[in-house]
Length: 291
Image (cartoon, rainbow, N blue to C red):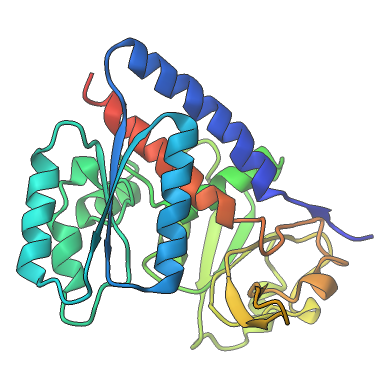
């Protein structure tokens, strides 16, 4: 029996409905949530993301300011811009689109953002808050993974979650979020990665697999047990169609694994729509804090 498809599109849509209500409430109190997105250079994938973020803001009634800078912008100029945005009361959330050009230190830039405007959840202060279970901004993709699990009826409580991948953007924070002593968490989490020995033995013990290793169709059917829930974070371009459209594959061999899984996210249409939605939610949360 093939697994139930977890539609990130549908779940993201229902969360956006909740966000819109909150935006309207804030506007009633004279506050319009504001998001500044900074794009340095001409990276095509980044341009697509930035456009999608702008569209999402427009639909929800969030003020958005997209600042495009040439690739040769100096680190000093970028830091000055962030300083200005930190002080701007119209802006509640600041997002600097990564990757940045090689001559700019990403860590320095992320550190410069006021943690109370860090709606990406990457500032070490917010990472620390996440880890100790304190109030802060959760990083958008891992938080989206948690919401997908909860809202699809696959509460991670008491389950064994195996995360495959240990990046600072997905792997580590997914573990940090799902192990918390909180509703929608309370999972036993194992993080596996490229150096893990006997990976298949480990993934076969998982009730939930979060695949974020960046290798197309890496998780095969023989690596999972019957009834597993699979969240596929991977987005790998494996070619283009004759019309020039990108062909995307996740980190999971979807067709084979869905026959064993009880629930699985597709690529595209799974985790992707959740990331921008959680960014919108964080922006509204930042605005609410100013009340």
